[in-house]
Image 1 (cartoon, rainbow, N blue to C red):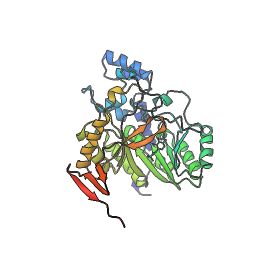
Image 2 (image 1 turned 120 degrees about the vertical axis):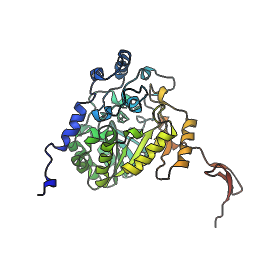
Image 3 (image 1 turned 180 degrees about the vertical axis):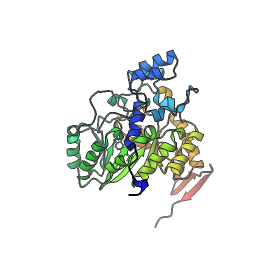
Image 4 (image 1 turned 90 degrees about the vertical axis):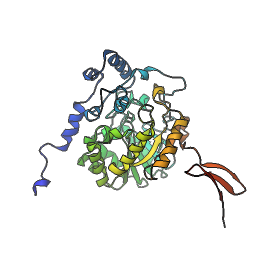
Length: 366
Ligand SMILES: *Cc1c(COP(=O)(O)O)cnc(C)c1O
Ligand code: SF4
């Protein structure tokens, strides 16, 4: 065996466990952060409604000198969260309405959401599933997933199984390997998709053991959740490289958040660095949904449309995400970008070009 193939002195798992231990794990750990007494009291009150957890790697990205720091805004509870605004919803995207069995949502014929756990490595303040995450005892057990797996096996139209939650990559390798094995044993399933914030908030968790647990018969797609270019670091780059080298397809979804990324320069840099540095394709930019206590982070749709129109000018097709809204009551995700079509008369369309000028396009069909 050559020297560089030897086991490292500390197993790779130790690094991420240290990151978790040294981070914020409980409300009481907020006391160790450089918050003013008023901020601390407000954060503690808000944390009662939506858990608080921040691995050290993510905590270290915060600039405490800046009260509007975009990383802090995503992870540290703020008093505004306590303000419920009329029109906000407990289940903003209708997950429950389309749940035929526990831990599964089936709204589109060919794909299902599977919820192996309702726990996360980081609790994002803007989470749209925060109401599902509050119940205790909703971690992973093999038994809890049986009805969902039986449902998938019984529905031959299902092609994609999307692990979401909670954060599926907060589970141990063994649990992930088990879920992967059970899923790939269902012949009509083709793709295993994982929606996760772990590569952003706890990149040291992306170990050789973790990627090996997911490798098998199925195509694996990991949908990361970067919201700001400051989240792109040497550590997140290494995590994404590990996943790409394992053969996973990497996509990213971002949420449009006021005061965090509702700015064209920020989004432009985020999308470019995702592609050029991490090898991750921007997939969706989500309009902020109607999760409770999030009015202070929501922008208008008009603002979002202006931002994506500008991104379209500045970025290549690869770097552009699709701006979508997840409609309440299970209406699904629909694109929100303003249309370039101005009208159509007798087979002649009037279409606005990228330069803003309207051109006519006459359809010629055989
Ligand atoms: C978002 C979502 C999906 C995945 O949709 P894609 O457009 O394929 O990414 C599937 N099911 C539900 C219920 C969803 O909310
Ligand atoms: S990781 Fe996902 S599910 Fe967990 S708090 Fe963040 S957005 Fe919500």
